[in-house]
Image (cartoon, rainbow, N blue to C red; front, side, top):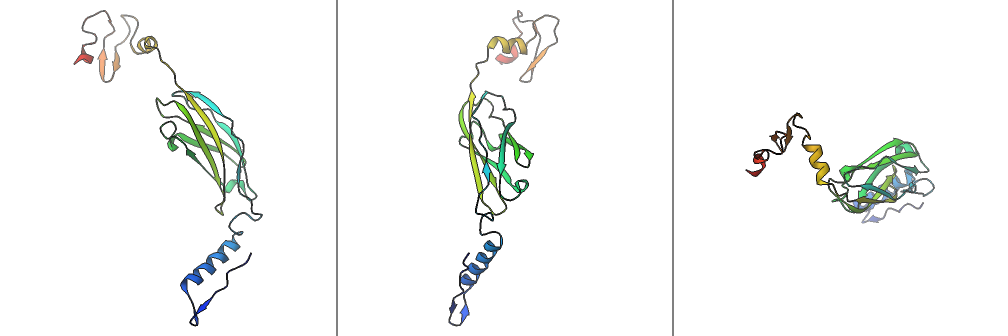
Length: 181
């Protein structure tokens, strides 16, 4: 690698030329701005994944590689639509070359989103790959919601919904009065 030559202006070295020379020397000492052989980290293939609304993915396995130690790679993610999957809904696990990502969509969200998985090495070189995630909308039956929220028998304990406690006699005229106020 060529290092810049310091140019003397009126018999002295300018601060800008000195900074450029020191930066070039530091970059050269760290491997020339990339890994020793000029490669960037890689993120292995990620299979397209589909989950139901309000359901997180299981751990999705992927591999990372680098010509330096893969244990020093910093793994991060980006998302093409934060209303479906935000950065807070992406978590990583694993060490070495074998890693996993678990993705939790936003509550009530559905649609298609691309999740970019990035690997950055100590020299700042970055490799990435994209996972296509489809979150399928789920229609919930009001019957199943009602049956799971309210007791089915007259001897079942009262249920609390949105801070209101209901007796379980759905036939009584006053059962739903707290909701009507």
